[in-house]
Length: 361
Picture 1 (cartoon, rainbow, N blue to C red):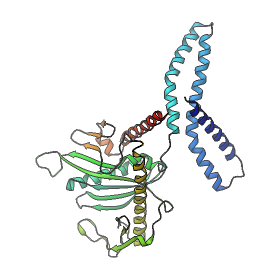
Picture 2: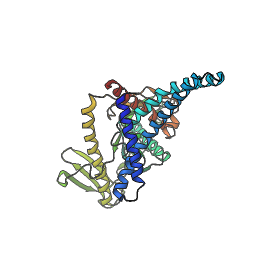
Picture 3: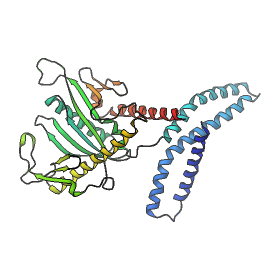
């Protein structure tokens, strides 16, 4: 590995040791302890990979010496075999270290706001949007995440025009951020008498949840309207003006919340979603500025980009960004096998980043 990289690794090893010693002392205040603990936990996975690489190198050196020994030919043969195996593993260990050193997305550790909307395809698109929303809900449950439904706009026939949820837990945004885009479904609708396959779509947006300190919203930039909440088909579900519509005047963004009976709670939820949408707009501007420098192999994540097709007659799901096809649509829709797609996309993204690092070196 390059000498510059080796120097960087030694610097990190020293810093990790310093943090370990500092955390063992009793004079740290709560804020300082929390800050150092966070840095220590972020460094630990890198140090583990560095240690594994160092151990392999030491074993290679030891085995190389053993092979030179004139005694015990059988032992020399075993050593040669083990040496060959370790040398074959070495590039993978070096790649793991480089991957651990890749800059992290600052928003990866954040919670997320999930938005699913029916696209082209009428009621069939709305039914598919509802299935996608439940897929993510089940997936969140399997990963131990909290899934809080913020708003549902139902069609009355089981479909969702729009659905919004807040998902919280470990690495939520890191694992879901590449789900943004157009999800296409191909199947025979229950209302189709001729048995013809229809194609419809739903859009998914995954936004990093923003805190108040991330985005400042001036009251003068908001128009807040209250109205009576209604259910599917216009049925009144509330006798008070508890539903809230917030319009952000500078951008024209509109957020409606009506699931809670409390106007105050609906306003707080609407502001939460609005803040995350504004933060995502800032993220997109930053990403667009970097787009010319690095084109990710997994696509831009833009909501207008078709990313995945769910073909029910053939039982397959295809992610078009990485040309991955899995014939297990039921397990994916249940959330059980969604990790297979997510892990493959994350691996491809890491490979793309490593390729950029290699080109620069």
